[in-house]
Amino acid sequence: MATEPHVTGNYPEGRPLWQWSASALRQGYLDGSITPVDAITACLERITEINPVINAFVAENTHVLQDAHASTQRYRRGQPRSNLDGIPVSIKDNLCTADMPTTWGTPALQHYRPRIDELPVSRLRASGALIVGKTNVPEFTLEGYTDNPLFGVTRNPWNTLLTPGGSSGGAAASVSAGCTPLAIGTDGGGSIRRPASHCGLAGLKPSIGSVARDKGLPPLLLDFEVVGPVARTVGDLRMLFEVLRGPNILDRHSLAAQTRQSVADAHTRASKPLRILYVPTLSAAPVDAQIARSCQSAMEHFQTMGHQVTVGEMPMDLSPVMTGWATVGQVGLAALFEQHPQWSDGASPKYLQMAQSGAQVRAPELLTLIDAVTNLRAACVDLFEQWDVIAMPSAAALPWPAEQAYPPEIDGHAVGPRGHAVFTGWVNVAGLPAISVPTPPSDEGLPIGLQLIAAYAEDDFLIELARAYENHSPWAHRWPDIL
Image (cartoon, rainbow, N blue to C red; front, side, top):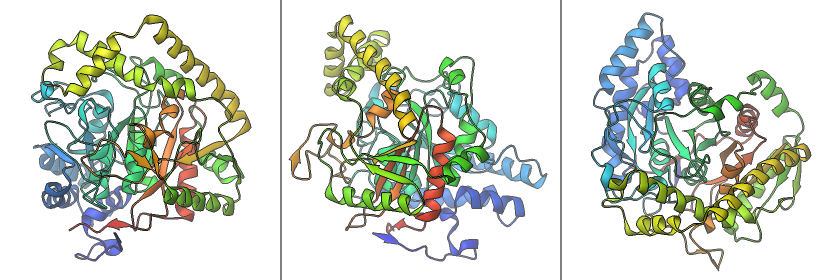
């Protein structure tokens, strides 16, 4: 259940320090009312209290207090490195982080400690952000819930019997519970957006290439997986995104994505009447009735904001990429185990079987799927000439039991492993930016999210639209009633 912020100490906003937004922490550092040492101490105390319950963190940065002291000194000299200097951030455990475990949730990598950071992590470190630790993932980050043989199940702070989703479940749970104000995750098929929706947060899947990648784990999902921010507010999300984003010559996609407009121009466009297509269901796939009502309520807010909302179906056939989705992961695992045979040691039988299936995929079948990807990306150019934004639920199901890989039934209809995830994967295939924002909660107080999707490289416009919606229908005051 949600609670109103309670008062602990003499902090601004009447909130304990672990409930402060990244923006509020930054202001406190600048005016000298608090320091990064104060903030990281509060976060570490919160993690000690909460992590035994939710199991969001799987590794800690033993140098983070030292890093906080260094950040404090930079503020005292009036020389912070960036807006994120001194802000606590968690890192998903599939992102290579120097001298910290990067296990991918699989036994073969239990003791793997990369010598260097993956590029987005390197950018975070250079910004002065405080890397608190690594957050839990499902094995190989290929599930919509969060559990693995090394660290076990991660639980949703809003109801610890339920899942926070996946695969960025640990990241979302850490922010939702107040362990850190920010987290970075990855999204290969909805892995930021769905956990954000299940945990009452904002989560951005950037356009392919908006956040350059290099020196990371091998990709399993072609170019579908991107790195993105998770935060309680859209303003905080933008702070983190500004540090993560940007081109790098080693990632050619990142060079293509740099058609960004200024934030001011993006804000101006998002403030004008927009053509929004709301798609409440895809191909008659079932959607939980409470999610349908909540998202419809959110769309009424967009109408009140002056936008033209049309309810309809997707004006394109998504079935070629949706039916081929499993093939991509299977082929990716087959390639991974061929390139790194030792990484299959101790892997769960499910993933060994997936790899075996992937090894049997014929070249014409794979090329046909790649053609479908190319065709979808081309079709999306026409789509966004007709519409400014596509809106749809972030997930088709409310959170389900934490130990369960997926809900077997939605709204009285039997569904398969991706029945809850029908709304998200096609966006990754298309390479588009999408953001999940909270909508009115369920009758039981569980979070629900709406997904907003824009044309390729219009990440800033999308963030500004989400910020306008947040101003109209705020959610950051909602906190889970956990300890």
